[in-house]
Length: 48
Image 1 (cartoon, rainbow, N blue to C red):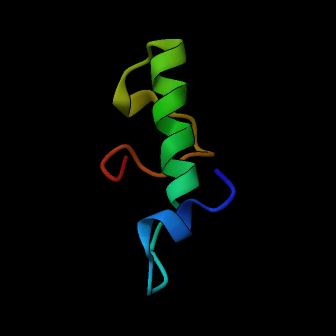
Image 2 (cartoon, helix red, strand yellow; image 1 turned 60 degrees about the vertical axis):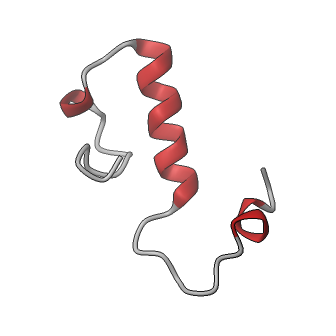
């Protein structure tokens, strides 16, 4: 996944890092926690 930005053909800077969003989704799937209970190291639950 090192070159995921090339695959998505990103031309502008994003507000939120896609890798952090993906990591948050993996965390949710792994732990089964609620969206609102995401740890502070991830973006806000409304973004994910």
